[in-house]
Length: 158
Image (cartoon, rainbow, N blue to C red; front, side):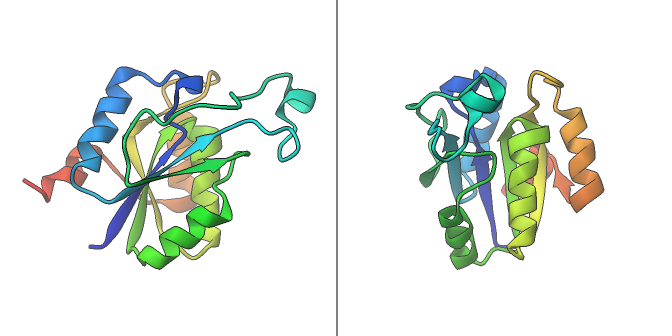
């Protein structure tokens, strides 16, 4: 199966737990991967004026994928979708930070682009609303059905 991993916003601004970073790094060893980092640009997305909060204007990805893309909103930019379409995957594995917001938004963007999003359920954390990420996992299952654990994913590489 041709698959690629999309890592969403695993960056300093969002203080991901060490187990998440380590788990993603383990998967990256076996599967092609890209990542997004969210950087603040009030012209693109009015985080500060509407929410009173903003991500950092500069940040770094805490994992080392094949390529990193910058985004300025909840959804991945068009360059990410174009890159993934050129890769022509059977499915796009998705993991990262804020399961019920940015990760879910990535799922909708992938779906709308004709790609097949699959959530890696044990490599995601939620926002401060639900740090466990379970709300996002349930929403993902409702909208896209496809989920997998990192152990299931890596079982084929043993």
